Length: 276
Image (tube, rainbow, N blue to C red; front, side, top):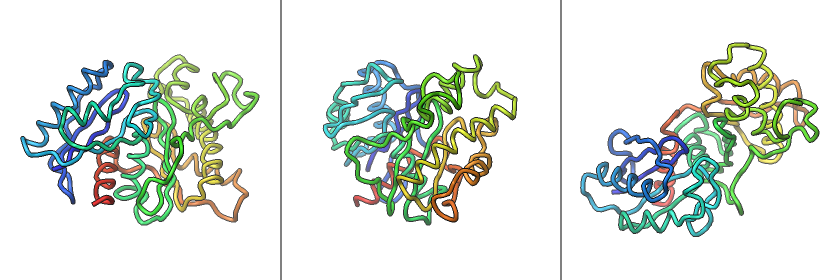
């Protein structure tokens, strides 16, 4: 039996799985801000999900950058977890080997294998939420990388001429939930002005354009809390992208993510299946 997990800045999800499928519904809890409390809670959730069976392996993603030793080197939303030996702590708590990836990469893998990117060889996944993240998935595998994928830090406006009120010049500073709330003084879902959402779709289209330029995908899948019914529309992004795209005669397919809050769990399952 295997344990699959997804540790976000707000919530953590845990499920069990065999080599081919998940076992029941994922367990969901608020993510503790304290590292030790978080590890203890995840271990408790894992033991509950597993029903006392022997754990053969633990696979999942976390919001942040993880080094080769399984240490979370950077996580803006989980500062107390940064610099802590997460892989070692989970392995000791559950008595099994642990594999950890960035959460956006795991969700991207889930979307590539089970979601909106299935059937495509090269999938570019972008998540627009509290921040902006993503990953490149090739033939059902997270692509090789030296220091992770950080598409949200792509510079789209060096001198802030596109958005003088934006706090920075990176894609994340223009379209993330954090930046939008800071700029407009209200939660994104409270914004009802369609012109605002169209402008955000245009900003995101610049980021998608650059992602296509350097990742050359067959499809771009976009997910995250900023892409909901009240939010940035994928259709709006595609419309603006067509206006600016001139690299080739046509753009890749643009799809909205399908797996919602369980994308990371399905990504961990896909990772397990690829290794099995």
